[in-house]
Image (cartoon, rainbow, N blue to C red; front, side, top):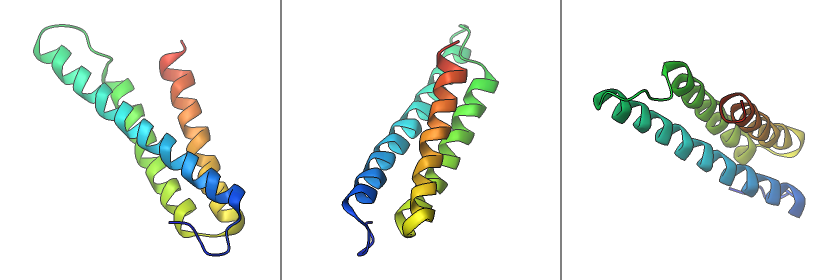
Length: 97
């Protein structure tokens, strides 16, 4: 939801952070499913810590995206920035080891 007073740059940032949030949610679901399937078939999965980190990050990103979508100005910018920072931290700590 774009605010009526939001500039094109902020609308673009909100849209991009929404896409990143959706991607992080899909990634968290994928990691959870992989853990479940691996455990049920006797293979090592990503581990409980990795699943927890992905789920917590997805919840934080969804909350931040909601703030970005429903607020204006600096608060909206900050919400979108939190999405990018949280996603970057998850990718850095869980994928680029």
